[in-house]
Length: 410
Image (cartoon, rainbow, N blue to C red; front, side):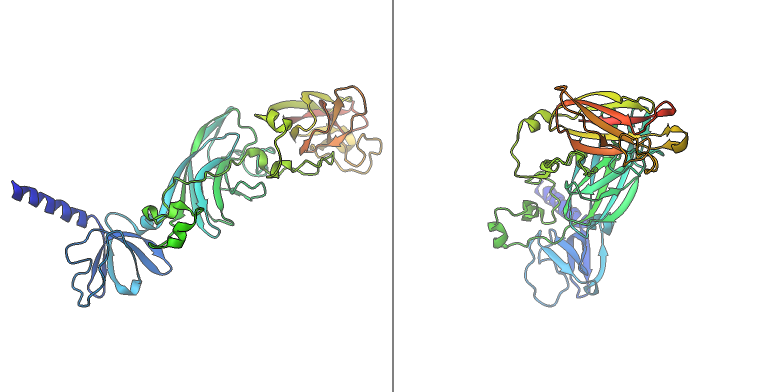
């Protein structure tokens, strides 16, 4: 019985050796373990269990003992051949993380931290259903002026590195390889302004090169640092542990840069970016942004009532699309308006005919409403309590036709 048990143990031990990667060196040694990758011109191997007598066989020179789990580096010139156990070298060199990307109020945190200059490969599948549209990672044929990338396909998969509002947005689609331009967490979303009617998700694979710049054993200085990145500890020397001590901050869809020429010159325009601000009543009442979609007819002289009641300090984003006919002379125009310069009698003389304008009628009924230019998109802080109205810039409305489609978030 003992012989059978001993024979079984020997077979299991031999099988474990056979399953390991094997590096045959030119000096006659054989190193068994796991090939982790190739960096700075050298192969990286984590040594596994070895036969009695050490990891070298056939070597004539005494060498220090090698512990199981130790990481060694070998130049290609020193290697006769490498035998990988059912894996490609790419599988050893790269790591892949899979994330579901829904269309939601915030960008999706992939959990992948990138280093500047690092090469990233992203592949996506799946479908998001929004209203009557089925959106793939390549997006739709149409564009969305309220999306983070208004000139790109609506719903196309996009990404950004870090949660900073000025971080460049990367169009990804079904597949893309790019180089990180900065250090930071990778966020993903679909390129669409509206998200409340969406369901489903893209299934996204993010592939990055393993970080082999690990902290070696005995690095006591690193151990003394209370702020060190614990994902590089000896239990995970290749930073594969996704359990990070400090979760990344949220990247909101509302943080994309909008037009910043606040028509009211509000000094608090960038208050959301101030890390030292104190929470006030405005912060507490914001909650989930509300969204209203309306049509603004071109032939309404007194302005169109949006039904939106604002309070001083409310953050408002207005996005407009479509075309109208602003009389026979101007013809078809966008919310930016036609050519300026010949409409001195217009409500807003510096803008062309048909330009989309707005004003806030004071809730108190006192004071004169200030007219401001909206165009295709505008973000501002409401200067007073009141009802929001939208109007077309013209001196004669009877020969106008059509309407703009407008989305208001506040």
